[in-house]
Figure (spheres, rainbow, N blue to C red):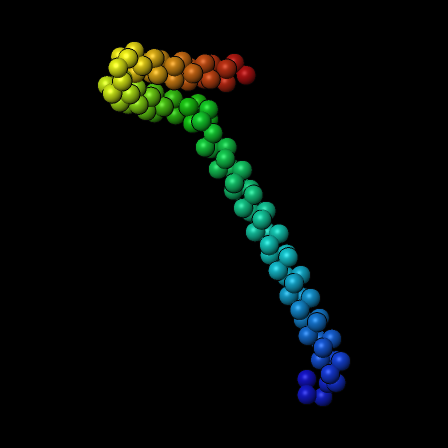
Amino acid sequence: MADMTTEERISAIQDERDDAREDLRETLTEVNAKVSAKVEHVGEDLRPDRIVEHHSAGAALLAGAIGFLVGTSSENRATGPIMIAALVGYALSRRGTRDAK
């Protein structure tokens, strides 16, 4: 580089900068593609209807626990059993529609 003129040095530095920018763009594109794929996968797994479909027993137990807590702290004693029945019914209907397909 010592034998280069000022214009040649500037040109070489600009070429190096442009190469670095292109490498950065490529890396960001790859990272965005990987993140998008993972976000879509996680988003599918965390949908409430998917959780109820795949873990209906756990969802029923959770509904029971929530129903118990709400039912014991509520003036209306029917709230707990209604919540349990609603979630169990939902789980059964979702499982039934999935099995029918």
